[in-house]
Length: 328
Image (cartoon, rainbow, N blue to C red):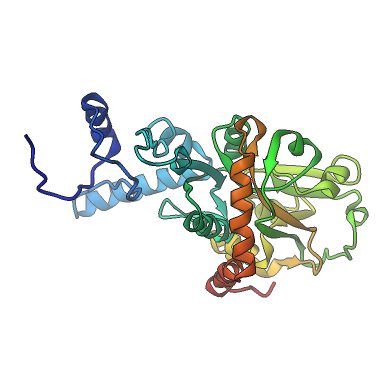
């Protein structure tokens, strides 16, 4: 007979899960406490510093071309709340929510933890409902394909004619102002997509920017796809594209530029046109095969309460204060 000598302990799920499954304990419950970064400990010496610099450089290179995430995916799996929910409704299970890992202030990773406006809105909904969310951020195309496969919901999703056939949508979570960037001296007046005639636009691979964009691509303007906005702005500097579409808003542009020394050094070469390309409503979406209609009703009720009470506006304003708006 065992007696309770502690209230709980912190351990890795890899070490505990096999034991709990084998013994079938129902009175020991797992909950996600925190995701930690794994660190490498090196000797404090000249040689140790050389190894540190080499490893840091290699890891940063892997992160930039997405190889790091591919290496980590097989072992760094989302928290799986596999235990039966004794005494609780099944709706209390953690729900996997996917999103873009690098589009601040909307959503981004900070020390491997999801941050951003949409993340805080999801946390608010969590606090107002019986649902809990396991939020995982990836490069957009990977997150989108996982969502299409029915592995989870996806935040920051736009609507277009193709996606409406694939996804069930929430009400609007956030409006994403997609800014038009050009090089200084190449400004033009923008009123509609016809003003982009003959130009090449740099865009996020796998992203859609609404009906006007879908109507214009390949007919009115050309598109050049990439995996992140840093590459996009460098293409603009190299004159490989005429226009870079970057968001959300001026804050998003500012945060992209801050991430790269070359962009920061040459920021005065960029001009943001006064009128955004569009004001794109962002939603939470689920593959229709997941049958999340009832959940979305509850989600929308919490979302509306957040709007009516001003909570969601305060979330947005807090990030505007935190990051500031640049002068470009």
